[in-house]
Image (tube, rainbow, N blue to C red):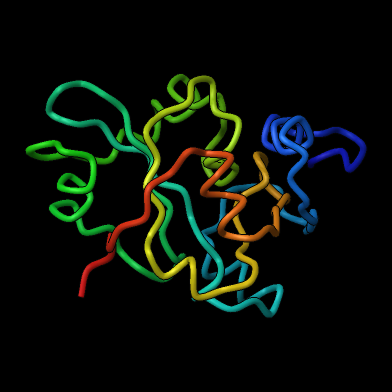
Length: 160
């Protein structure tokens, strides 16, 4: 259970960058997917985003942020970062690579700043919801601020 008084790495990084955000805490002991969380909290699937971490043929890691009900188009994702192909990292590697646990992986505040691409639909919203860096924690912020703080590109990333 997340202690509401403890800031996550993502929150600390947003604070340092003077980025406005809101935090939403919810009760959850273990990983459940974003769609179930959105259903539980009455949130839109389209403005709720999940963070996926992949590795390219070159061995470099990449972060992709897409709407929770969508699937990552691996070809489009690879093209967006200039790789021949990419694959999602194994669940067992998430903590080692990002510093976050499954279900609490935020695109902000990972161990290293990996190249990040956010699905282009993010700009349709005034605010989007992302993981706050722990299970039971969400961050709500403007997509422009997320793009700025993660130095992200925007591209079409989901399967048609």
